[in-house]
Image 1 (cartoon, rainbow, N blue to C red):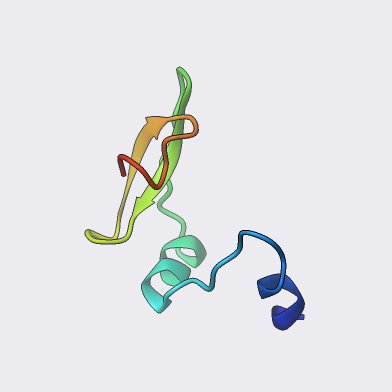
Image 2: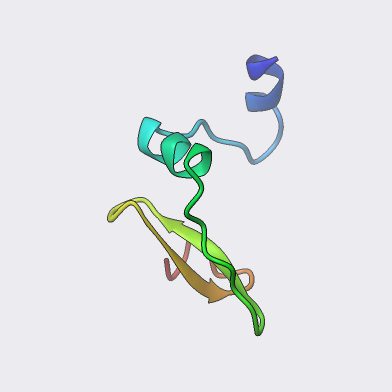
Length: 57
């Protein structure tokens, strides 16, 4: 099943730290047009404007 998911368009495999962040929770609740974004460099969550995760995060 993993191969089928990774063969989907615009997907990527998560690193171990990213998987732990998702499994362990920790994503903040964001309101006012913001969404949670995981910063791969600091391995921390933050709230960013919708659609900007991966750019400013």
